[in-house]
Amino acid sequence: MTAQQLKASILQLAIQGKLVPQIPEDEPASELLKHIKAEKDALVKAGKLKKDKHESVITRSEDGRYLEKKDGKTTDITDEIPFDIPDSWEWTRLGTMVDSFQYGTAEKASPSGKVPVLRMGNLQNGEIDYTKLVFSSNENDIQQYKLHFGDLLFNRTNSAELVGKTSVFRADTDAIFAGYLIRFRPILANSFYVNFVMNSSYQRGYCQSVRSDAINQSNINAQKLNLFLVPLPPLEEQKRIVAKIEGLLPHIEEYGKAETALSKLNAELPEQLKKSILQWAIQGRLVPQDPTDEPASELLKRIKSEKAALIKSGKLKKEKPLPPISEDEIPFDIPESWEWVRLGSLFHISPRNDVEDDVDVGFMPMSLLQEGFRNSHSFEVRKWCQVKNGFTHFMNGDIVIAKITPCFQNRKSAIISNLPNEFGAGTTELHVLRDETHLLCLRYFLWMFKTHAFIESGVKHFTGTAGQQRIGKDFLSNYLVPIPPLAEQKRIVEKLETLLSALDNQT
Image 1 (tube, one colour):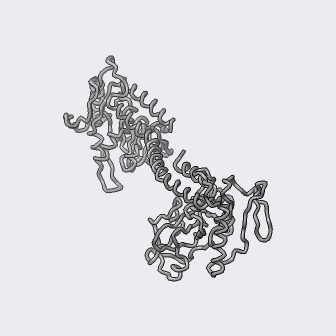
Image 2: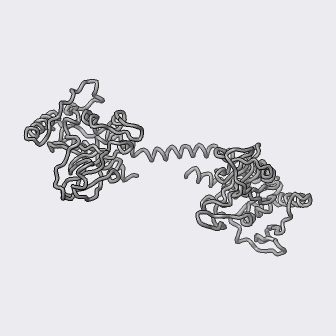
Image 3: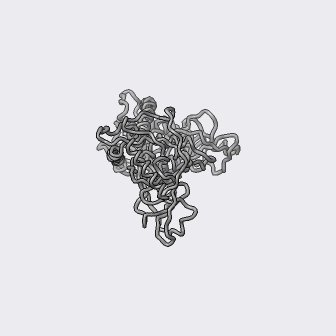
């Protein structure tokens, strides 16, 4: 149960007489209604209130039927009664127990002025939110629409979901209210109890049933508000209900905070687990080491030999030597069969393709490279002559990494596959790594490029202006990677992808 559902349940129990016990000594609500009528009659006589031409009186017959006397007629309204209430309570129309329904000012407010003008956005969760205010200095409005402590504001025009939201005014400072609101003031009844009724799921159901809809908004006028049936307890019980609910609200708020924290944790947990699993993988902690595996040092010798042969044959250009690795650079311990190596020693970074102009190739803008812990991309088909200049080159089997913020942090990287005729080009905001030796398990390196450690290190080495920051080729060439034996690279990938798939299936 969510905090919102818990609060709704408590309010529903309250307005059905199930939250606090009834006390026989309480003056019954039938007497309170008599006092309300007498007070309204006195206000009418004093000229402070207009006489209600459609006065409603609801009674119960001996056989339990609800009868309403109005306009000289008595009507059986039993079918309108939504739920049972205690014997000491009464059902009454909202219009019977309030002074009047007043629409707010239509005058436009301004960012500054003498008095705050409350609008629909200021009505939040049954209370007044003062964080976003406009003001008025219109003296006539300040007198005519002045709010008093305990007044209730009803949002008569809003979205279908929010129309009818109600808040109680409990400030001791001046304020007036805008035209999309209706003000009403309970007579002798407890305003805060009435506010809880107006924030119950029962009231929300009524609003949904009587609203009229127009384009992008719904409306409930004063006539419909007047007809709302209120379950009215004895006055003393109203006070007990208010005290009980207000005592529970801080606990509901704490429950809501815990719920929010838990929801946030549940939403973030799969991503955090993925980060942890990737980190374990590149530290040699995800799968056991096998003593029979050829160590990574032998793999590196073969890679060095293969690259030398490619350089000698002219298929690969010789690059300047990379600096030796110092002990201070090593970020964490790795198994004895692993080795630390710079990326530039393993991959050809930013290669170029040699393709005939009329050949169909794949073209990949940044939008077609998927982000997150995935290995996914798509492409458009173009002629090579259309994309060979001014774009980044790649081919099937290359690893591409977005180099610009925020794509880099969002883990936009993939192993290129399924290109027409094996070749392609794309956005210039990519780094491309090609394994010219075909001796590496590319998926191991792709997952390494999605680790938090790699992303964090890249961000620290960003260059460029705000909003246009990116990682450079030198960062990649010099980046230290932990390389396991080739057989272990494959075991790590198999285990990794099984775990990542399981996490995806849970979200």
